[in-house]
Image 1: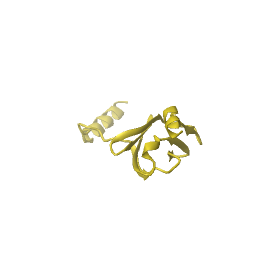
Image 2 (image 1 turned 90 degrees about the horizontal axis):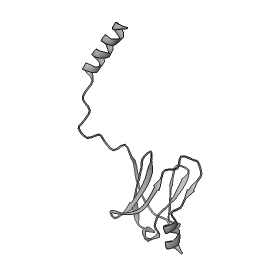
Image 3 (image 1 turned 120 degrees about the horizontal axis):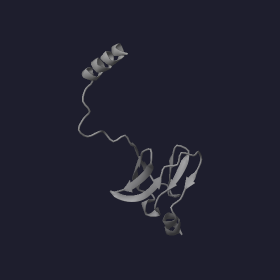
Image 4 (image 1 turned 30 degrees about the vertical axis):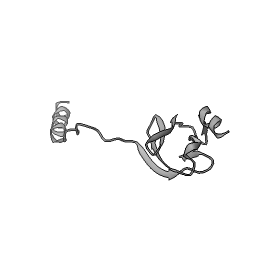
Length: 98
C-alpha cells in the first residue's frame, strides 16, 4: 500500500495545475432556423420562438439544457432531453406561431 501512495504522490507532483477558469464544455452550433422553428439536436427537436425564422441562431447545449440565441437575444431555453426522438415544445413558442 505504501508503494501505491508513493506512486500517487509522484503522479500528483508531475500534474499541471488547473487553469484559474475552466473551459466551457458546452457543444455549440450555428445554423439558419427553418420555417418550422425547431432545431434538432441529436434525435430530439426543440422549439424556438418563431421571430427567429430565417435567421441564423446560435445553439449551446450542455448536459442540462439547450439554449438558442439570435443576435444576442435568447429565443429558446429547454431542459435537455436524454430520451430519443422527442419533441420539446415551449407553449409560448406554439402560441406565437399561431
